[in-house]
Image (cartoon, rainbow, N blue to C red; front, top):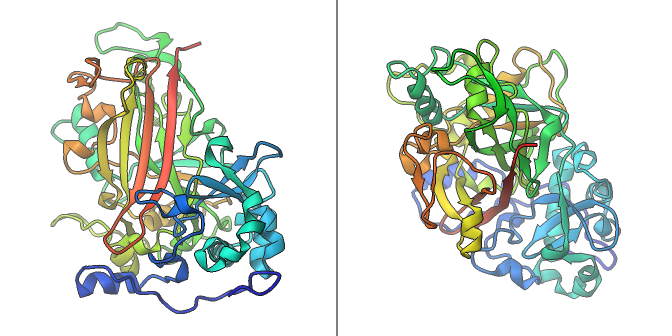
Length: 467
């Protein structure tokens, strides 16, 4: 595995590791349809003790990529492992071939340069880093430890340069809940079950977790007002989403087939699509979201790679009887069999008063991503179906992830019924929408018996008063 000076280069999988998890033969068959390798083995441990702790978001089976600045130095690519961040570029001298080149490209202040090398390079680098950090390579510890930074001492940055940002509307439960408030008798628009609906948002306002969000201003027109007025948003909301990071560019004029669309994805992050509901309600017709959406989008600092999530692929959401089948360009049997991902997303609130009282963030909802109506591959296939090209670093939002019952609704718009049914908090406060000083926190994880827990870290943002 390890040669005297470097980790041996491997550009192919060493067979398939079959997880020893409980479950039906059908479930195991579905897992076997996905390429798995030694990095997924739940028995693999790291010589970094914190990575082996129960409930750790960043075990050795995860190794998400981000951009950090150590106490001394410039921003660069890192990998989260336990409570540490590994300087990936510093590992280039220990590696060979494609993985060494990928590691060297992590010296840049964004991951786009490394992503440009393609999926084989991503996989080779992740596999070799896993080997260096495993207990099997503990004799390398003294050489690698100087390149580890405690997470608490690392400044984290937006991990990618974002050329474009597209936000989808892929949860049928959210679309139904939101539509019912405005069209009680016909909540879903006629196109919803045929088209993965989306809009192009603003890439320039995408920020990393921890960046404060200034309350936006805009035109507001209450239903009984004779004319709109310009004022700070009164109905500020969050949207609990999964971010999809494109790692492979496509050619202008050439659609990406749904069967291979998954190969375009570098990884996933948490995404908060902040929404000014009152501004949005007045402006969205006839061309859709604008100032009610483009003022801020927050993403988590760590991108969990597609490869790390391979064991957690599952069946796509099963459409109810009577729903139309996707059109042929959106149909692929393998995507239906394993295009879903078993990710659990949670949203929390921490008010200024709660902080004063020393309270923990209060969980507002817990949403299963596997209930999404359109798979990620279908979103990409539709996005490019007219010849639109994707760029490396493009960010796609899943749209608000809401489950079938209230405990899984992913926005305050749904949870508080547009503010009419405020939520009671442990501090004695209530919330219909977000107030100044409130902090919204997202968390995500994958857990299944017999597999290593994969976490996404946190996506946080505190709201400041309008300027």
